[in-house]
Every structure is written in structure tokens, then in C-alpha cells.
Image 1 (cartoon, helix red, strand yellow):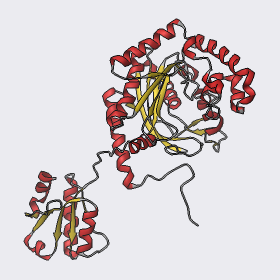
Image 2 (cartoon, rainbow, N blue to C red; image 1 turned 30 degrees about the vertical axis):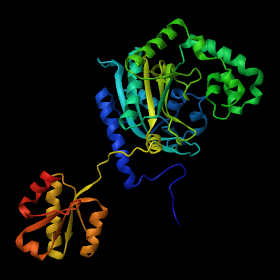
Image 3 (cartoon, rainbow, N blue to C red; image 1 turned 90 degrees about the horizontal axis):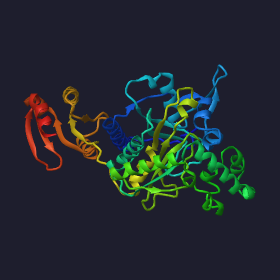
Image 4 (spheres, rainbow, N blue to C red; image 1 turned 120 degrees about the vertical axis):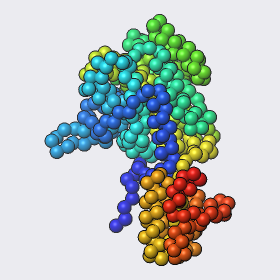
Length: 422
């Protein structure tokens, strides 16, 4: 019987992980610079957390969650996104009592959604995200967006577009909700069953429908920005001013609503405009979620954040033809001839590795020629051949593979020589 990875998952092979590690290092370094400290939450949570936190009218909750009962009869769900877990932890550990606010968190790890596999979209995928909880200042909205843009630009992406919108406050959304119902209700029978159910529960979700996005009524739907209260409009203007001060170009899209129920005020997406990237262009999305902390059992504390798929970031790099500068070279390969030389090789390699010098040797008893070919394939910078003569002289010729230059070095000086020339 043969086995394969489950549908919608992937193996990330050794030749690919160097790219992942490079991206992850950029994410961690920028999180440090922006002062977003890492939080690690469980891979599964109580199902109700996502029903309340993400919203029971979303596709995620209705169709995409991996939910199961444990042996105690409790309903648990593999996390489909990171914000609800981060906010749950914020409430549970009373981070709202920290003297320094907002609390700035980052996370990175696997998420799970049962959706149709497409390029860059998997049922198990790795998501990086940040949350800034405890501030209603439009400046923090701009900072969160700036961090997201900084990540993509640091890895070299240029074909980017930032789209923003305001979802307003409760008064704004109530007025807009009434207008949406009046707009869609006469022709709701032409829409999918999901949209028909959403009309009464949450008509804003209709604007985010993947099936009916080309319906003519979508283009003429009332824009939420037309219903912004004075305070909501002022807040949105301030966010835009901060983005302009930071030199971040943006477009306002009145139909941008995002796919989760907890958003209000600022919402944004970063898209790839690279040729050949695919039909789904979104790289990253986020927004403000004032009210979510309270919904999950905490105080009335505002928050904002974003999340991005690492898989889609790598796909965008591929679309733009960008090769990451990854350090995957081998400093030294030791070619050993004979049993005594092999023992000495193991001893020398141990001393090299103790000083941070990457080193390797043959473990399948290949001939010298085959070992040299292996050193070349592995991209070794230096090669030494250790045989009877070298054992007697306690010195070895160190060959630089790129130039062919060789230099005879005593065993006891090898570590210093390699450290100086690596």
C-alpha cells in the first residue's frame, strides 16, 4: 500500500525549507523592530471561540472548519485563523492590565481550513499575523499596515497594491445594512443559497461572495463609505493621513469588506499585481476589530491586526522572479581514504562544527572520485583529502573549489584557517 499527503496539504522538502527559513527570519526581525512580541497558542481551541470570534455567518465557520469531539465530548476545532486565539489568550491572561498599552503580539504557525486547493492555498497553511490590542488611535492602524508592507518590500516584492476601506461604527453599519437589504432583496432569488441566508443575518457578507461577485447588483450596491458617521469619516481620514506621512500609497475600495465578521472601521488588503500570479491576488488582509475582545469575555478594548499566508508570499516571489539570498552553502567537505582517515575525519569535523563551520563527509563508502563529485554537488567552498600521507604528516591540502587554489595546513591550524577564510 502506498501513502500520499492528505489532499490540500504539502511536504516542504529540504531544498525548499531554506526559502521558508529566510522568510521566517525576515518576519521575526521586523516583528522585533516594530516591537510585536511572539505569542504561541494551541493548534486547537473550543469550537465556540471561532463561532463567536470569527462569526457564524462566515464561510470559515459555516463550511471550512475542522471540528471534532474529544473523548470527553467537548467540541474542538483546529484553528482556522490566529486572531481569535490571540485575543482569547489576551483575555485569559489579563493582558489588558499591562501598564504598557497597546499589547503588540505576533504569531506564526499552521492554520486549517477545508477549502478547495488552489495555487498558494492549502487546507493546512502557515500564517503569520500581528495584533495590536488596546489602542483606538488611527496611528496604530497605519503602523500595522506599514509593518505588512515592510515585510513584502523587504523580501523584494515590487508589484504590490494596498487597498483600504472603512467599515465604520455600529451606527454606520446599521444604516448600511438597511440599504443593502433594500438593494438586494428584490432580486435575492438570483443569488446563491449562502447569500440568500446572509440577507437577513449579515447582508455585508454578500459583498464578499465568491460565487456571485460578477452579479450586476454587486457593482451598484450601496457603498459603506456613503453611510459613515462624522466620527467614522474623521477616523478614516486620519488613517489615510498617517499612511501619506509614511509614504505608503493606497487605493480606497468601498466594496472591501473582508471575510470575517469581527471587522469594523479600518479594513485593508495587500495584493500582488504581478503578471501570472493568478486569479486570487490577495497576499494579506486585516483590519480593526473593536468589540471582539468584549465578545470573547474581556473588557471593551479595541484592537487591529493582519494575517498573511507564507505560501502566497513565496508564490508572489516566484511570480516576480525574485530569488531569496539564502545561506545554504557547505564550508568544507572531507574526503577520507581508509579506515584510519575516516576516524580522523570524524574527529576533525566535530572540531569544525564546534566553531560554527559547516562540514560533511562520506557515509556510504564511495571512492575518492565519487566523494569529490558529492562535494561539488553540495557546493562545498573547501575540500580536503585525507589519506595515509596526510595522516603521517598531520597536515592536509585545503582546496578552494571555486579557484582551485590549494594550501597545506597542519591539522592543529585547520580551524583557524577555515574561520579566517570561510
